[in-house]
Image 1 (cartoon, rainbow, N blue to C red):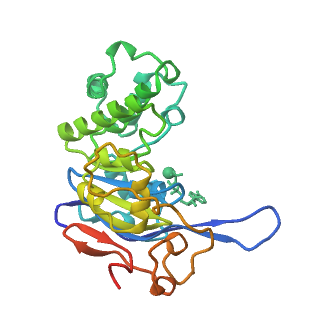
Image 2 (image 1 turned 135 degrees about the horizontal axis):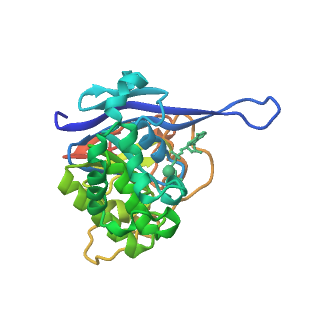
Image 3 (image 1 turned 180 degrees about the vertical axis):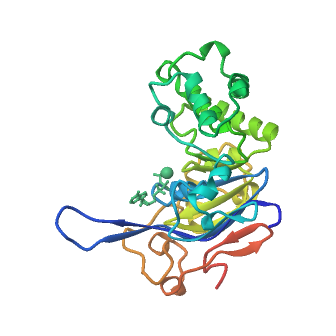
Length: 322
Ligand SMILES: Nc1ncnc2c1ncn2[C@@H]1O[C@H](COP(=O)(O)OP(=O)(O)OP(=O)(O)O)[C@@H](O)[C@H]1O
Ligand SMILES: [Mg+2]
């Protein structure tokens, strides 16, 4: 706990959705439904789960792009959720985000040099040092100095993601949320960007929250992994443990969908590790109830909470916490 750079407690986010033009009951979406975890300094914490489970919402709240409905976020022991926008300003430079689609997140009318200069301008980086800093950033991410005057459309997808990474690094951040940062790239380019992120982490002492729906990618880069399902964390473990001894039935399903390259892998995907039914989960019970092959009676009546099962492995499942 004392080595934690980021700690979140009972974090929740609700979206109120109004449907259509005519007055109808509002629908409340619990995108993040009370999650707790911490990320240690220098660590990569992977967040994995299927589309719509709340990964991006969690990432956005951590860098204060979006306020939580309730819960607390601490950065180096300071409560971010208690700060005003003005009090956040000096801290903002430490918390950065890289998005999935650099084509959308980079201004097409700005040259590479202008893109990298923008955060330096906003945070009043000394003018005389800006050109040197821009060259340094391009070196960090392996972009040629000759491409300074080119525009985003003139770069390949992988290079554009390098630009997005360089921009995120501009103000020397401590913590970066990478949201599906390689999901739009070819597999070979994905590996290059993942390796770049890992090299930068070592060189600059960065801490990452790495979000992806692809467990294979998350496993490659992460030290620990949190598995999310419908707004909740259902399992947290270090990478090796999660791969060798997944506990939550949903983690097993996710693993079953990852191609196995290692025939000696302890855990083997089995035919039954596939989703089962399509009926609603009981409101009072476990949200995974309707898809679970191992459900018990209690699962329809009581929500399981995340509890430590073994050293460094926590799971929210009645099979383990009856
Ligand atoms: N601004 C918003 N307004 C209303 N609902 C939202 C908003 N942002 C997200 N949601 C809803 O919250 C839930 C979680 O969304 P989120 O984008 O966090 O999921 P995700 O795990 O990142 O999914 P994906 O893998 O598709 O990126 C979804 O049901 C989504 O429709
Ligand atoms: Mg997302």
